[in-house]
Length: 358
Image (cartoon, rainbow, N blue to C red; front, side, top):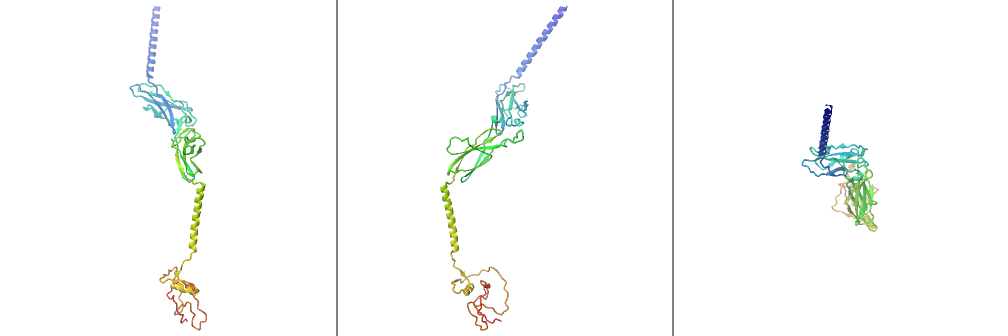
């Protein structure tokens, strides 16, 4: 009886072991079927003008709709984090600019991974290669404005608009941007990338060679990021400057013109003009200098420059006689002409005889 009990116990243990093995095999089979989706392929992290994008490819072999989920991390945090904007999305790309902005520095390394998921299945994660801005990022070319004034050339570099990002220490990503500007004469086949000037945004210089065509191109230069910069499309312009001999001729011509104008002005002032006076003024001038030769204007009109108040004289009649002696024997002194009223248009401005003076 003891033997029969032992045999039955042994048979039960064997049945339990067989069932447990069957359950574990079933679980392994179900887990393998859960990861039967293929992972995404051809993952790539690229950054252009500080906009970083993760792209991938996928061959959909299932009739179900396949979506994708992205996770990221950087060298400082180490732990993987879910990126909510790219969780369960149908597209094959994801803008991870905000994800990489959490600890944004030029020396930091960033990582990303993505997996495919359906309603009942998912794939394993596929990993992108390590990303660094100084190795994998590119910045767009600037715009160059050209202003030519004779021999002087002014170049103005306009930086491209980048994403509004700040680094870990609070500085904007474009705080140390410079322009790497190259100039050369037209006809050069290759862009002279050596010995190019690095300026902040403005460069002023003179070109001594007359009538030449100069070409210019620029790219963004940053000591902090050390990113690859695109060269702008070359822009050529003509410099119509004069050489020394032509400049001397123009200078002498300007001096000659100035001297000619000065000479003509002086001659005009030195030329004597014929002066025409009214009769009243001619009589007064004749009284002062009887030998002067003057022309009398018959219809001359005197212009009143200033009006003065006439002070009445206590006499019955007052006359002026020009150029004649007074015949009254009681008056021994000659009558002189008062020049105070010369040029005035008086009513009695005519040659008269002084009589009856009280």
